[in-house]
Image 1 (cartoon, rainbow, N blue to C red):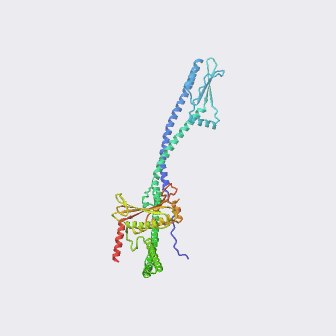
Image 2 (cartoon, rainbow, N blue to C red):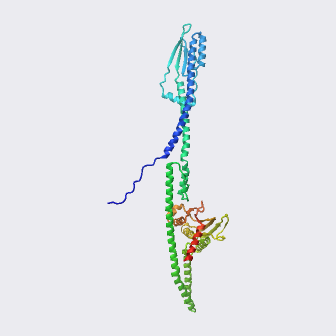
Image 3 (tube, one colour):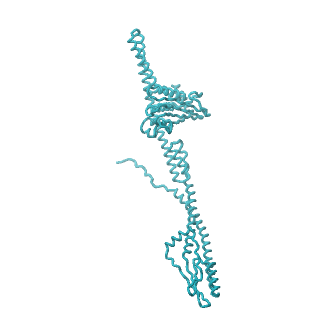
Length: 508
């Protein structure tokens, strides 16, 4: 029987979306404005249409009244009156023709009004689409005194009606476009207002991706529910990432401390065990040198033993210096920056003296004061205290970087540089190693190949720094490589740790 407690059901119901509702509410606020604008434009256009149609109806009634008066005039006067009426009183959508009893036209055909260019293609398209537009006709007989009655005909003109229809359609399209444009413009401002916080949100996401300190604190306050959920999730992810990175940093510290402890153990064994035996061997060699005087052949052997013992003793000292660059680690008490400078000088001197490397190494040390003044380091009046772990990290990074230069860079020159800065209680050191070798195409790929850069990055990261690499001489056939990292610490915290360690030592 399974007695495991069942986990409570997780509510998977989707959250109500607030953003679409907010956008739609603003759209509904804009829609009445667009409709009001369309209504105003429609009223203005309707008033103009009513005026034109009223004038057309009045013109038609006036024309018919004048035609009725023509019957009282003789032929010449009647023809002149109808001609003037035909020219001056052109009817809307109606064409007037007049023929005598023999069918001869008594009125000249008036020219068609030109169609505006914007409407020409619309009129032509409509005419092609609706071909069945046979004009309607109305005939009226004008009695003449001589008995030769005239025939008055009125024909509908579909082209003028079509032109007016296309003009109305174009005006309506323009009005609708204006209404739509205004609505889209207002909607654009509305949507921009809704999504305006997204810009600051994207900026905060970029800072989180770059792992900048306190990046989550820059996340903006959102007024929309969905964006608030996004900000909350980002804060939780950032906090979880910080916790995980802190765990990794602690683990990295532990691994490096284990490595240093192993180096300390080896140093103690070299000093206590092998060192004592070597000292005894040197004493024996000295005794032989003294008691074999006068025996040239044995004297040479004894002298050679003494020389080899001295060389071996020096090699052990050098090995102890590499294993314990800061001296025996009895406590975590801070050391001055000058101690690091001396250790790096010894490291660089050892590289220059090493045979067969072919790489000239130099050391560049500077210290920048609070007022911006620069002086060589060491040499400052105030020996800035630094955490012992940071000092050891800077030394090991310099050591490993120079090893990479010798193994992979094919360089002739290399430089180790440190710039120390202090601003009140805050201090920082800029570490760099550059060479004139073949360089690297991509630092990330080189780290994956396991050529020592991954270890450098891990050491820098364990002390809160970030290892960066770029060509030392861009554009050159041999661009070289420059590695950089920056570290910060609080001076008062380091001094406080040193005071506590001194008190513990006195207590012991």
